[in-house]
Image (tube, rainbow, N blue to C red; front, side, top):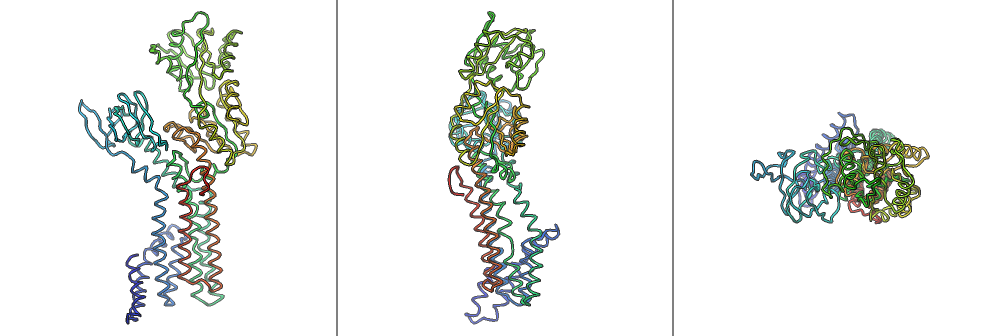
Length: 610
């Protein structure tokens, strides 16, 4: 390209300098140098049975050479190469979020082996290694802290700029940075299994995937290009003007049209990644923008998902710590938020959870059944008690109802067929929930529903505070799936937001599945279309607004590209646009389309910049 530019300049300077005979050779050489890479790409596309823009330019330039239009042939080829160069540079910027992520990947790790501290490449860290991270260092693997305290910048994972304080037993993730402190961790996920590696992989896949608009435009280009060649032949046949037919070929190139949708998608997905939102491709972006109804799970989605045991009421003279010990031992087989809360409470009281579990079964949506140290336990809601033929007398029912009206979840614990106690567990509504839901409504959500397995009193309390349109309580996972199906059958485009584990069936059933990532659990990343890495509902509000802005940006680009092609063709046929000027306008339109898409990189929820 540089050599071609120099030759073109020399060609134009030759006549004034008294070397007019050198003008055509210089411009012809510039044309040949510049057309070679274009022709090679056209040939490669033809081998794949694709009719590319390069093919149109190649045919046009060959025609220009045939009629000895060396000035226009050289300028056209140079402008095409220069435009391609600028496009590549600009597109690189739209992928800046992914590039920044890759650059943040740690390269080395300090591990303790055989009593010695070794610095090794991060690829050589294995599960179970004890890894040391000092102030300013990057966490090289996913793991659990065994020693030390630190504040970590987790922006690479969550998009959250506020440092997080971490201590023993807390999880840390590869790619995060220790701002201040000292940590020793046990490696649990290494290499390509780390959360950070999966995020990079997901963003790469998402940016390569295509929206419906892109797929349509790809098919359109395959028919459009040969059609333009046929029309150029028709123009020549009617006018006998080869120059006009060649110009027609050049200005009809659908460059801006073909690139408009993918560049918007890449920029939009990049913005999401930088803000802690993983959107799995252009089709997800397109579908999310059409959502009009959102279904929320309660625990861990609208609430913080960090419930606490507020009270343990025992009956029949059962000792509180003894009951807690039995129940917590049984709950070690469960991954449910409420069960883990009971385990956490037992650990806080330093109780022994080494009891022998002879048999344990998780009953989805209702609780668990287990045999611990010879005692038969049933722990869960009223439905489980009914199924286990456990009688709930008036005193127990009155106490449970009172706790539920106060915003607690009442967990019934039966030992050997008799109610032994009630665990009251309370969760708090997320601070950003009211603002996030208001943002979603402002951007076009018409209906918000909460589905929960919790009791109706607690559900009603949350629904009233958040001003939800509807709520349904005491549901099993299959009930949530049925309700989502009903909404879809009613013509709604439905997004389901949950924790990605208990709600996986409903998330998979919805038009768009959204998971609260909490650092990116494997299940949430695999099941959902959208993953919120920082567990913040404001990220959902941002993702929804971003999807609308991205689709709007695509439409702007497509409309502009089509308008430019029509204006250029009209200009050619009316003899107002010529070969070089047509190519210049064509390349300029591509850059305008890319620059328009780049505005999405800086998009913020509620802003009017896209």
